[in-house]
Image (cartoon, rainbow over all chains, first blue to last red; front, side, top):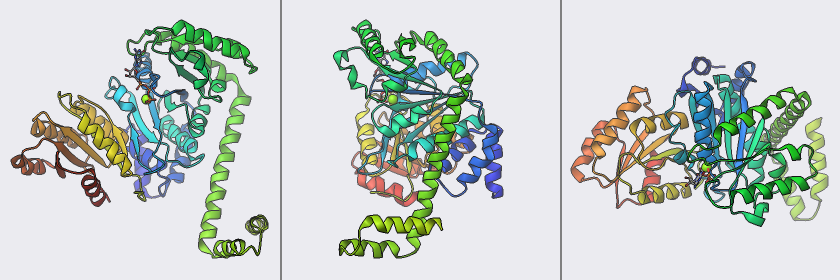
Length: 314
Length: 132
Ligand SMILES: Nc1nc2c(ncn2[C@@H]2O[C@H](COP(=O)(O)OP(=O)(O)OP(=O)(O)O)[C@@H](O)[C@H]2O)c(=O)[nH]1
Ligand SMILES: [Mg+2]
């Protein structure tokens, strides 16, 4: 590792917010040296608790993150926030607007907020977010909140790795509770009906309860459904109590932790192998030859791939 | 247009004026030009802007100022950034800026000034050519 990088890591561990931010950029961009950073900080990770916040667009996730963070800070916990928004598939750019609703915490001591774009890399997002979580963890954050919109598979995969997941809904979805994507319901540890100042919040609670009653997932009958008014801070204290209960119960589940590590190792392996293959194929003309052969229908793509894999393995 | 590295831009609206449209249009426009735009909304204080610049580790900060307080506002933001030893961020100012104030802004450390006639393409090009 270069001296410069070593200094940056030391600065981060001594509490420099700028060094933390710089390291996150490096890891997010997979800049040269990022693996060295991950290896160096890993021994200092494993302390933070990660909470995923997801739900349909506009449900109040950012506002809730803002008030929830205030409550956690009041309880002497330090907080890191990762707010994920989608990249445009056309331009590769992104509009990351969650900070608009996080004004209260934007300059609060002990809070660090980072916006991240999905960047369209299949499966890459959840790995990148997990790595960013580790840096925040090594920095010393007690709680890390991750906000994602519950629409894309990539976003769902991100919150799935959290220690506790809260799904935020709003009144007025009525029979359309299915509006919350299937696949999200199953990962919820807590449901929040936000905007409870609006009409129909009791109905929304009942709808969710009904849906959970029909679920075959184990434990679904015990999932709390809480009402909040994020803009006024109502229901936040109870939400924190419930979140802590979930976090404490997860703490005991070794098998769950093992499963998560196994899955992380597999994803890292997938990425590393794919990268290796791309580099290798980029260096020789095998792929060009293969394209021509398939185009001319001289060979089928399946045996070509089989052959290539065999050559990588040996 | 896809770039080799994702350039990150913070769009902030300091001061008390409530005209958000220009800043929003620009935020969307820059997204469509391939930038990752962190939009922070109305009435940002210089402290909030500096904190966001640091936490988000942006390459560029764009200040949209229509209230006439551009000299004071830009000055305060740049001062805050200097106070935190942030030197490598490109500061841009946009809005209703009289011609005679442009040299003053540049002297403070503003890299580019864009008045209401400037196109998004022009701003995008400026950013691309100034961010290494
Ligand atoms: N009436 C009411 N409005 C709320 C409440 N919570 C949030 N809002 C408003 O709902 C709108 C959306 O809030 P956000 O916090 O941006 O929602 P979000 O889920 O983060 O939105 P995306 O990130 O765009 O998906 C804002 O105008 C908030 O002020 C609430 O409890 N009651
Ligand atoms: Mg949001």
